Image 1 (cartoon, rainbow, N blue to C red):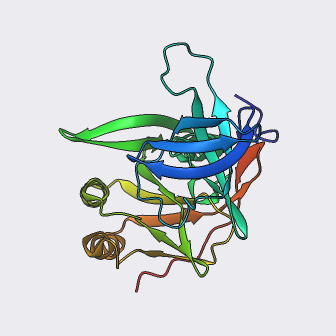
Image 2 (spheres, rainbow, N blue to C red):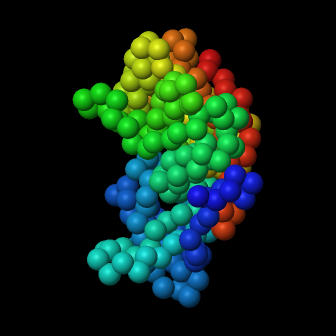
Length: 241
């Protein structure tokens, strides 16, 4: 692991640029590369990608050398007016975990042990389990947020029964004396506030408000994004109503 003073963020693999033609079937997109070649790429984002999949936009792709992969290119970033957006939903978990380990999340600096993908009940896993020197436990579920409208970041961008279940699980863990965190990582640079996307998933919004009342802590961070690196930046004010 890098020294805490050296760690800054998630390093991107070498990227190539192209133009988005269309995204379809959730996990696929067609892109025209700078040399004019058209390729089908893997889209590592299962959400609706509302507001961040406009045809004609500039995109950045990584390329895999794995001969077993059907689609060699992975869509990583897109440029929309005013910001780059991180598309890859695998990035938030890695970035948040590494940032906690390196003391970059002030709310969680007391925790010195970090474990990923923790089974908390028969049918539920949460992203992180943190422990401090007193063996106190903190459970963290990380959500990737890419929907921003007029400066307001919102989650989710599609109805998520899985996300609702995660909130229920965090509430249960808090009721048993543990600390519970829902962590929204905004993979954009144009958010001024964060709120639940009630017009998309009313049940999720209601559960988030109730979770807060029951002691689940909400942490938000936006990011600084370049084609070389994605860094955690600032806390974003939360507006639940």
